[in-house]
Image (cartoon, rainbow, N blue to C red; front, side):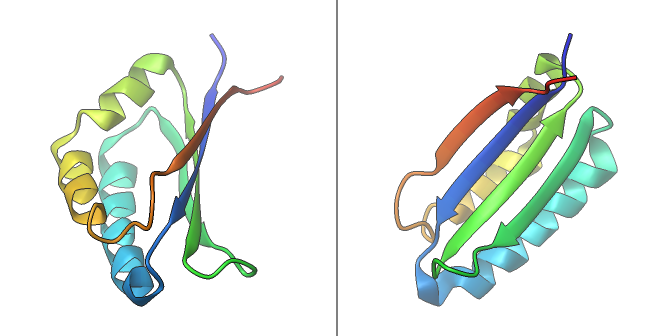
Length: 98
């Protein structure tokens, strides 16, 4: 089974960017501490598009990705993100090429 990648692009209301980065940083710490099947969970702030964040994730298996979305801390962060986003996230799923 191959590693599963996910790239999420999130448009955040510009005035909420700092709050989003704080909440996402807390989420990232939880993921890193608790999800051994999550191989990468990093986020970046676009230099060219104000209020745009890119999240790069890698999971060892599909089950690891599925488990990530079911965690209490992911659900709690998602609820907070709702008021910060300026639209629906764009998600791209991919299989790692070896």
